[in-house]
Image 1: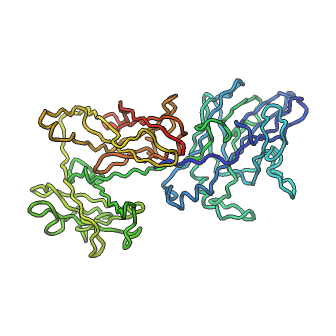
Image 2: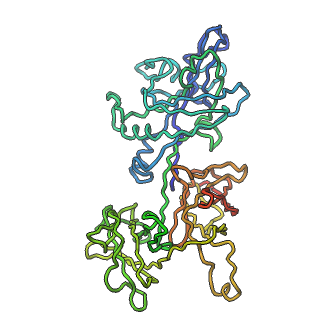
Image 3: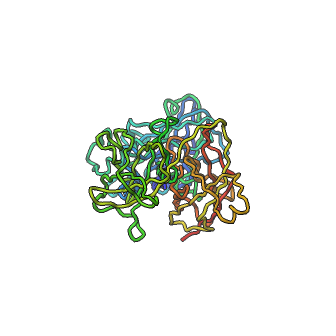
Length: 503
């Protein structure tokens, strides 16, 4: 699972716009329970020089993000990106075009409030344009009307047509919030540690004081009835594992040093559950590679000399690969293998630490070959373990079987053999809702690769957290394979459907 989402736990719109009487400003109005959020600038409505603005305040449960990191559900800093996602609301009013919104960290605690009126501003309370919060001891005002904000970092969301959603990488700020989780209210926030008071979203630059109007941009609030339109903080990371056990190649001059590396994994299951090896824990583990016995069923003879790369295999001990911890119960090791004059049909990797051996595996190495043509390879795909339905609290693993589409066995081979599976090293998935074709988990094929498929000796797979999906609907999975000939992902024909049921 490489996507996790948290819905906002507080949001509201604050404004200094004039009420309908055009004499009184709505600086005390609150819209904390409205189902939409609004940003605008209105110039010259009350008189020739009047200026009215609206801003959004929104906050996410960073303590839950911290808990997810502590439990290992999301990676450590530097290995995960966080995105703010907010969704456009269609409306009949004038929509600004060609503008930017500034997204800044709020520097003071505020109350969401319970107001709902976004038309006549009849509901009062905190937060509003003047006050941030109220308590039995009194009202806490903003230092500056319209909200108090940190000067950095500031993120920008750009809108060409005006109808776009917000999808902005805010990793720097989220990591500052996570670092500042232990700060008390009396402490001054440092440059790299802030308390989580959420975001303020407003028109950027001088747009709020412009001599022209930008009216009005609306987003869905957390109270919207639409499951996939709620504002979310989304964590994305590449959790794919490329286990080359079924796709291991001898080193070749056709490939560079990185492509000549093969990575193999050890999965330590104890009574059906992944568990760390007690004597290894999260430390180093080692692998030695052997040729086979006379009947090629077990390791035999001396350890094979491996290619020294200075990281996984060192020149002073070219018989041992240094591997390491990946996640609970999973370890990996990478090495390059030079072919002997007579190539081995099988090699045997022995996982060990000191004199203790943990596992012995069998691998059939392959040889890279050049080609005198540029093939157009087509595949047939199936989800071997697809169920008709899943419950909304489970995380399901989908196993993707791939074979060449033009596999045409004769009668004998069809009766005797299963079709030969092909390992696809670069593939991605997306999920859409069947009823309206809405993309609910788009392809992540850019910098984060958060929908990249893993693979091992049995084929490709990925994990999907069903809580990302609204229950009582049917969904479909599509797979795209990377085509190096055109440097692009190509979506395959097959569609795999399932339904999500409430618990």
